[in-house]
Length: 287
Image 1 (tube, one colour):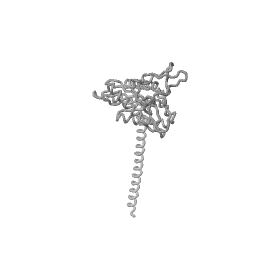
Image 2 (tube, helix red, strand yellow):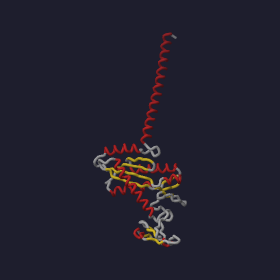
Image 3 (cartoon, one colour):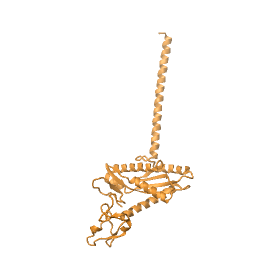
Image 4 (cartoon, one colour):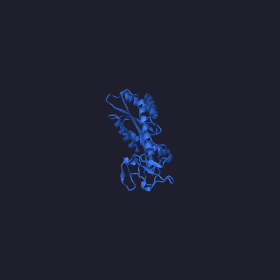
């Protein structure tokens, strides 16, 4: 081979090898940059979202909520929502913390589906919040919306392989133009606590021997609640007839069986957590 040709060939091969090495280094650098970018996005997502439910966390909720209020037009009606699970601790005590996590994830999914794309966040523990577009946002609409959301959350769910129903207290407050998000949340929070107080009050006066320890007055009588009921003969009685009092024997502290009210359904109003499986279950609720 001509020496000049050999030199040219060797130079070409060296150039090819150098280019190949440079290309490898460039590809490694691109992969490293992509990995760093993914890690940065993951870190930002983790900093902005609840790791269990995937919902925005408290800080992100306030950031996005304030942006929603700033960009809201005059015709948009918004409502702040605060949702708090009733006696959530009982889930952890009865089924374990893994089951409690299942409940939180299910509630988060149901709340997000109810909000239909609007802002929903987990504020911490068993408390959630939202900023949703409403209808008229008057008192009647707010009350109906709170009831619909509470019913959505209270639908039976499977926890630790068993069907369980857990309830939530919900409060809504209208967000008018110029209202600060924190102020609206405080109003919704107050409504939520009022709803929780009403639930606890209803429990105290709910006459359910199967689920609840009955509360009797010192004179040996107890006032019935405002719910419709069935008497000992199975006849349905309206709520206003329940304002009677049932005498209790002052010595035995027992009530005549013909005056014992029976619940209409096995799902008794006012219970926070009810095991709905076919086998005999123990009530987990408590006021």
